[in-house]
Image (tube, rainbow, N blue to C red):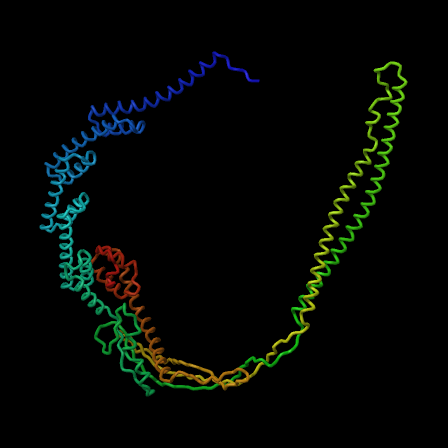
Length: 600
């Protein structure tokens, strides 16, 4: 049950709530007021950074406080004026970088400070003049630093941009001059890097790219691996094959990125090999090998049992067995239904007899009550014989319950019997359809009969075999020449032929072998490809020794002697340059694109 609060309790609760709200309000107002007060104190003391931080805290507590915004703007304006005065003092001493930093800070605090903006413009112009003076005195690094400082503030400053271009041209000329001096001194590796650096600084300002290509070619000629070839000794009297073994074919099969030169005369003191070739023989061989093939053809038709009828019969047999199972379930359901129906009739008769006994007993009680009323002397009284409890007693409750249970069971059995009858009818129709399908399907069908026809085939093979003797000797080796190597190279082509048999579907196939001249050219190319592989093995061994020598000097990649060795090694390994040599050398010379060393 709800009980109202005592009247004295209500005001106390309201006062507590009001006090709590006032506490929150006072705490918020206190944080805002404290921040504003601190900002005013710091402003009076000219502590602009602390005042700005205090006013920002006040705005964080109340972003809509317009008076705080005005105070913050005034603080920044005064702070900007103070920084501007300091910048004037620094500018008067000639410290232009320091004055530029202070003026930028002044404009950050107050973008409307026109005196600061004007002084910043004069400062930038003064730095440009200082940079131009440094450029004339060839102090290129100082000039570039001054121009970059101006462009960091005003990216589109015309004088500064023009000055940067002039610095780049000056650097390009300086590196080009350095490259010329190194080239005249015989230091071609250092000269190549200097020319590349000049071209990197300013493309087209000098003839650095053309000179770099000329120096690169000199270096490639200097470190070139020579392959001295002599005319092929043709003992086989096969000029077409001997032509494929000429020096020009060898040069076309070697990689173009590395300095390998195929020449006919050996200069003195050059690294390389001498290749002597002898074409011993060229032997064309023709062979015919007979063998047999088989061709399957249609020989006729034959009658076989119809597989589809077998499938339909199996399906019909399954449907008939299912029908038998459904009929068995129907018979079982019918027996149960009839048995339970007979039991229900018996229970119903028993219940009806019990009801008749109860009715007769109630009629007797009513008759006795009537007689007792008629014999009463005092009206208005109810005799004991008229007690209705005598008729209200139920003596057939067990029979009635048994009758209800049996009725429910009989209804369930009746539904089950109806279901089995429907299933039987459905299955019977399916069996009848299966029988009709089986009767319509023929017992046997015609099947094609195949046979194999064996026929003769001739395999024609044309083989061209060339025997080449080669001698590879080092140009600088004083040892006895190595033993000659004789190698057989063969190229073959084959094709089959047979007669035509139209009856069995075999078409005529004539011989279509390649021309012997084509195979002779191909065998010559195959021999030359193997010789090019052996030459590359010699070249790889030579440049691997040079790479190991260059790696030992990588502890000081900027030294001129190390650069000379490294550049020559990199030109030898242009197809796969080692990164542990390429990157340190190019970084030591300031090259941004190491691949430019190979004119890529």
